[in-house]
Image (tube, rainbow over the protein chains, first blue to last red):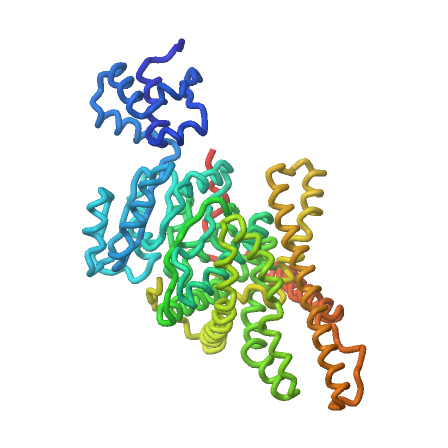
Length: 413
Length: 139
């Protein structure tokens, strides 16, 4: 049958078993021995069957079997979850990771000096919990704190208020079949769509991930590998110093840095994540402030380097233009023109692009059976857009004109 | 997540044109034997979205134009307007479309010119102290 030792044969089986503990997941590919390429039929391939085979072949205790299977995994994955006072949501996040079709090899919770028992809740799930001596002050700080502890080939960052679709990790990891890919991110949709702000964000995400981001990915330049759900090649991430705290948008900073060093970033729309988005104005304003300042800070930091990155340089230029000029038009030009010219129909300019929004929304919502939700949430988007404009102009004014960098990381969600 | 205002401004036009360009881009890749069949579905979907957006915008402009014509006609019938014009604006005028595309061309060209200027001024610049030498790629 084979020229290698039974132990090697068993090890190959164990690796596959360890990565895919659910029998239905195994059916997606034919398991083969790494050495002799012998295929195993499904009937004999349940985890229990494999374990009994290994014990019989090797006479090794189950714990040892588990450890041997873990250590040499070529595509091992560690998940880092930064958490500061996330007692309400961290359990759902861990549970969703443990129920994946491709279960992570290690889950590290960085309990960033929480006062609500976040760490204690996480420990009940059997995951690794680390706690820095003092609060790191930002998500990037907490993630980078755990990065040296990662020994696997891949590392994933996920927010403590985010859950994943059951096959999200399996789908996302496909991106790394290309050895040049340093990072990959997935489709993000709010988990709760109830309040005005959550609805506005739902439309924003549905539109952007259905249209803009897929176009960006086609040209090989997704603008951001989203911080709430991204996977990285560990050694590349470590070589870049992890997540930087020099801007408030560490995900954008890292993505743009990857491009400048010749790495690829991918967007995989089939991998879906569900974060909790700000449900009231207070949280939303904190998040918008952080994002808008983070964007302006990154443009300031990277603009020279981005000039050498095709497509992305144009995308960033038009986004910057819109952030400034479209915001000014929205907040000042349109209402002033309507008032001065006594033509109220000019105010239709606020919603004139409904068809431009509606088509991608239908394309995104229809396959998810969320057409009604998308349609009913559309008005909220126009409110969020105006608020967005205010925060962008404030960020541009503060960072570019007054040259006052806002670096306080206020947790929004 | 998204900087800028989705749907508005030249950003929307940029992605619209990017989607319309996809088939030509893919054709070029095919000729260079770099095409991948799995990208065809993405191209089809995004191209459909782009064409749908164009159709939707045209329809909106036509509808608004009709509404305004009707309003002008009613005003004329009631004697509150001097004349009913049959040349009331189609809200989405061709000139507006060209103006927006022209603006986009100016911004994108500006970036390219800036790139050339920066290359000329500083041939081997390093923009980012954090950046390590390129391409650490797995085998």
